Image (cartoon, rainbow, N blue to C red; front, side, top):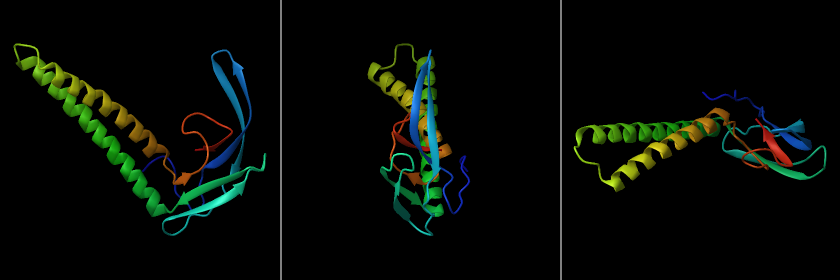
Length: 153
């Protein structure tokens, strides 16, 4: 389940951004990556402070146990399924109301159904993305994109 195989040590590496170069419509990032020297605990989670091998900055990483990581993966998968269900039910309700009523359905109801459909799609996409990349490692770095330090998954 998910993209990552879970072992005693995390597969993710931490990255220090060495340079970025803008080339036309995209930016090329050149990071230096290093192993996260934290062993998975048998239960719960374990935190460790590591000095970046490039700039000597202190970085704190938390590594979750294999059962805790699997529980997080299940939570993300259930979130994605709930989003998919919301999208499906809202879409089918919109189709049903649009086809069987002679007049226009109530505008507030239509708005809520459209919100449920679009919101369900977004929740499903985010849930599947987090499910796919969940590996039980948390640490510094921006959630999206690349910063000075980040986790390379």
